[in-house]
Image: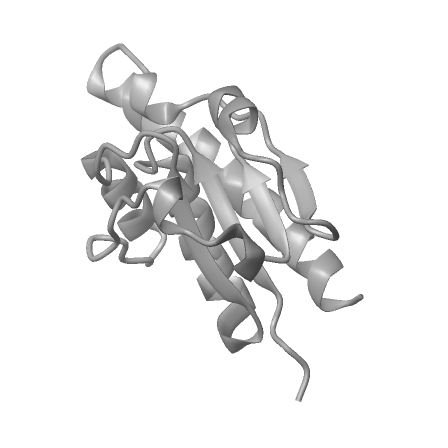
Length: 142
């Protein structure tokens, strides 16, 4: 039996973008992939990320915000960074590890009234979902 592809989603706080990416990858990839997420400076799962994912039927309230230092990069076939800080802070990856960078704004940094914040989380959530589907299609069809 072939080894399942393993993907790590990485951002600074491991609070929103990487959590949403991990959840979408679990939903669309199912048992075909091994998934995890981490942060260079984890701060806990953002309540609005939990809300935004609940809105589309995915519960991430049980997710934890983990430090990159707790992960063995040798275990991953792909590492996806979702912010510039994570990309710059990411250690050198093992040979043959696919590296992708998705420079998406941090929805946790959106300021404004509640409608503006909600809209921002929805926009980023949709962008992440689209990119996750594309990544899984490429990884699982190769």
